Image (cartoon, rainbow, N blue to C red; front, side, top):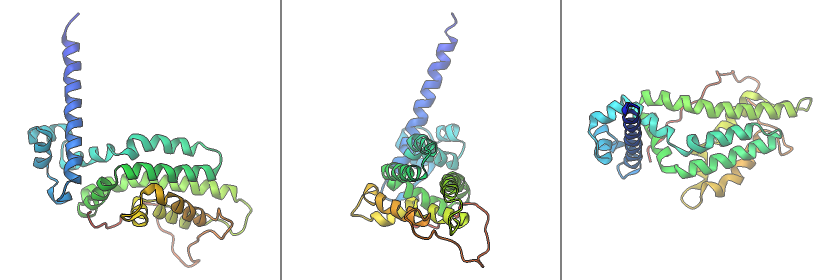
Length: 232
């Protein structure tokens, strides 16, 4: 048998190990004192112990590297599968509770890195498009929950304002909201019950009136609104 397949497998394994090491180094640089100001391809290459051209060979550009960092977050590694499982639950109450618990856990794990990535998105239009594309998936999940609650409320008055409820739910079940409520004294798990309560109020699941836009408010396209976040 030719040794070529073994050599190719070894090269692939080595390339994957190098890629993982670069991503880990990038996360360390982003989280280090100096934050996004110190985040350069050269700084990441030094931290990973590789040449800068190796970084470009693996990721193509600085934006490609940042995309890889985003995809290394717990929300992607663990959260996506858990959120999909939550959407398969038949009870909207259980789905909403599972969403809040999942986001609290995965965002807590990468709290500082997420804050810095938000800062990069606020400053870099190219990465902002990457961030907004990822955020559109979270908004889609909120719309799915809202749709299920609306279906469960069919015939009830007042009807659920889909646009208002989705927008408010997207804002409340967000890393920014968790960060603001937790401050320096609490964990995201600590404030998850509060976030859950607010989410239920938005959707009218607590017996109250669900949120709605004023009758005169114009409707807007269903797309994520990128927040300008001060880098942490």
